[in-house]
Image 1 (cartoon, rainbow, N blue to C red):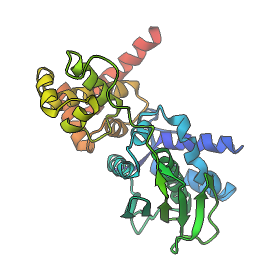
Image 2 (tube, rainbow, N blue to C red):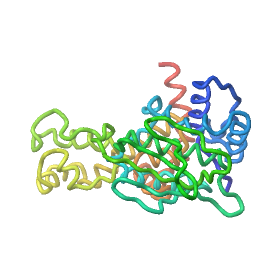
Image 3 (cartoon, rainbow, N blue to C red):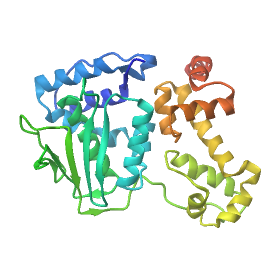
Image 4 (cartoon, one colour):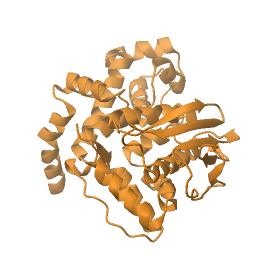
Length: 316
């Protein structure tokens, strides 16, 4: 199977470089504009690092607030603090099936030790390391890590991020080894506030309110207990109210399928990224559950309906 990279990530690189006054030609995406060949991305990043150094790539994460409406970025930013972010990041890596991945060696309440790893024959290059490092640093700050300091290298003493400012690692620094540390955590702004406005939690509109909460953060690991807490009602009462909607799992499945169908029709994201954004565990889970509810796979659904949808939108 060919390896692909997200065109959204490369677009973020281009935007960040433009903010730094650097113009460069990015590789052309394939698969409807949602993906591009992994090796093309790799050559592009190496070219940027050779001509402009590592700092512009390290700073790419700073454009994430501008991309908050992107469903993949929104799914990451919805994390309820750094631990939840790590879970979501790992699930994203399972979906994209990249040859490179982040290994979290230690994960505490106020620190992380991590390594950007890959196959021995093709380990990640410094340009790829600092890109992921910068993105994770910004995601951590946006999901509650206050006063974040990031160091790199085998002794993890080279400071590459502190006081909200990125610093280029010196030549020879092992950019694949990272330590993140933060003295305190703040409440996360990405998580939807509990109990949306409306009728009482046990009123007739509880199903629509439950649907709204689920849709507001599909990447969250939802349980019936968690949903009841958000709605301010008891688990037993909510379970009784949701029976007509197919129960908790039935409602969650419907909401995920509707969201996935909409993103597939939009065509801007690869099916694997759609599955991640909509909260499925991995690609087989997404394919199996989507087909069970629509009778077709996500790829077949897009192939059958996306063109008709885009044509209808253009004439609206």
